[in-house]
Length: 127
Image (cartoon, rainbow, N blue to C red; front, side):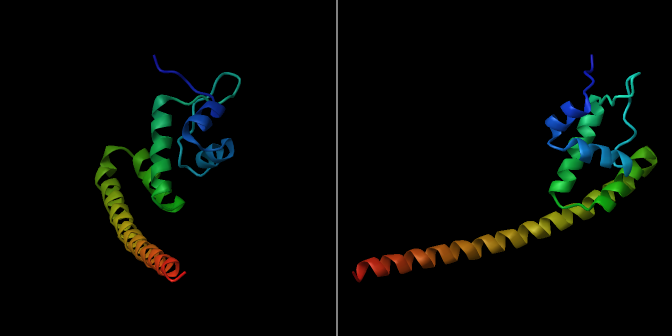
């Protein structure tokens, strides 16, 4: 049986704030979340999985606007599978480019560290 989670529980599990969860719902990243009879949100396992995917998209630099586009297509169902795949492939290419840039920057930093170690060794040798 699926456990329904409160907004506080889903916030803790996903690392998003309650405010962010409400914002995501308001701007259409989250479908309208089911509610209890007293009006409290109750998140399903499917909601949690979707929020975790959104977190991954954000963590990899996808814009909110692009995430909204993806969410809108998802809501339209299987007829949009191709369009969603294309969005993800474009994002994948952007992430790969950023990774290459980061790798190049890291290598530059590593070379500079080696240079400073050599300078320190030279400094110690002259004392």
